Amino acid sequence: MTPKNRGAGIPDGGLFIRRPSVVNVGEKALEVRAPERGVVEVKGLGRKVDAVARTAQVRRYLERYGLLLVTNYREFLQLRMDREGNVVKGERYVLAADEQAFWALSPTETAEEHQGFEAFLGRALLADAPLSSPEDVAACLAAFARIARDRLAAVEDFAALQTLRTAFEDALGIRFEHEKGKEFFHSTLIQTLFYGVFAAWVAWSSDTSPRRTDRFSWRTAQWTLNVPMVRVLFEQLTTPRNLPAGLDEVLDWTEDVMTRVDRERFLGHFESRELVQHFYEPFLDAYDPDLRRTLGVWYTPPEVVRYMVSRVHEALQVELGIPLGLADERVHVLDPCTGTGSYLVEVVRKIDEVLNEQHRDALVANEAKAATLERIHGFELLPAPFVIAHLQLGMLLAELGAPLDAEKGERVSVFLTNALTGWANAEEKMLAYEEFRLERERAGAVKRSHPILVVLGNPPYNGYAGVSGEEELGFLRPYKEGLSEPPWEITKNKLDDYYVRFFRIAEHRIAERTGQGIVCFISNFGWLGDPSAVLMRRHLIREFNAVYIDNLNGDAIR
Image 1 (cartoon, rainbow, N blue to C red):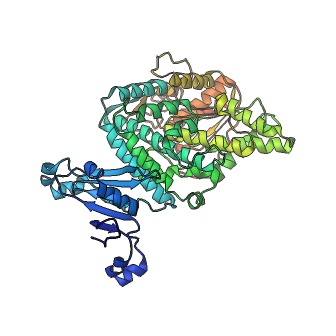
Image 2 (spheres, rainbow, N blue to C red):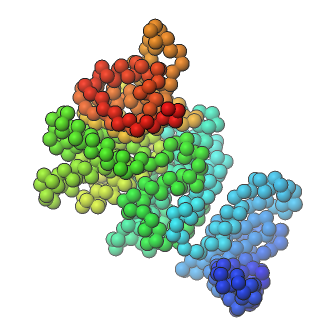
């Protein structure tokens, strides 16, 4: 406290780096050092921190130390100075709105209500420190995402948010019901916003073109990602006149954090092409671990993905007599639960590998790109992993030498849609946003018109609380019809599990629509032995010529 005057006055507190040598010597060592992390200015309860931020004293501190934490005990505001000499407001934390409210606080209740205060102080004390570990970056992003989620919840009745919610429901054929559904909707939007910014930062970090600016800006993220439906989300959520929730301010804090990341050390923790995918888990775990478990966000091990794609490729050659397998122009592939895009990325890699073995020339990359645009399809219900899948495939095509052309509007064939609806009839509901309508139409064309020959992936096992589909359960009728009658007499069944619904959709698309093809899924063990799946098993055996099972005994009971 009160470090010596170093030409700018005597601040109320100094922020120092905790070095072992200093700790050993004691506080006297601090007297000869300048505060490396900035200083603290404390005012009385009646002063407003924003007014303090405009004083000449604050400017002198910032010019000398670069960073200032100003507080009136009830409100805390982080300030810094940019390269042009402007005072920039950073993250703030409010314990009480005014002096009267501060004195009315209960210590016990305040400690319970403001559990994020300590984390805020940690971020403030390290405000200019470089970040390099995935855990530290994830913690910062997740903290800001939680703040943004709370702000979004506070404007629940705002018209723009209601319009966005209705558009989502109508586009995806689902309903966000009750309190759980509302929470899921808000969390989905915030995940998309913050992980979209992170994904755009990765793309920016990888860009070596002369057009790249020296500083990353979250405001360019919507253009970097080049996904029209996501662009609508950014526009609606971050424009104050659309949604006065202050999300733009929280994203400004996020931008400051991303400029502090030591890119070389941080990127060194990941394979470059896997960064956006693998960072999603630590981010979601820090943001909301319960939600992570609910969504089943556990990335499929790459060894398993490679094995399944190779197995499908071999089956196409041996079982269906297609020598080029996945590389054949007639083979349309669908991952109905794309997640972050692992399977589609591996399919494109396999196509590139096969084509290079056939004829090594400059056209191979363009052929792989054509496959990605026209016959390698993915469906995903959650916007955040949907964004990741787009970025992953875009980075892969750039790596192969055939990048997407944004000026031509090129995008991979991965769509934000409910894979369990829209297979029979086109949706007729009007949508508030043209981008949502086009997304629904293009996904519908894949569902109803494309000659899908392969369905593969890792379907979720559980449904999402508060989210219900309108037509999903109707598809399960063949697995249930007569199940309660002799000889089965099964009145309670486990057939509403999500992975069973995906089996039924895949069977419908391959056996009943295309007339030939391959289904390759990861599932749990239940459908192989549970009595309630007897009709499902019989149905699959009658519809398909062959069923191959790699049984890893993945069951929690047996």
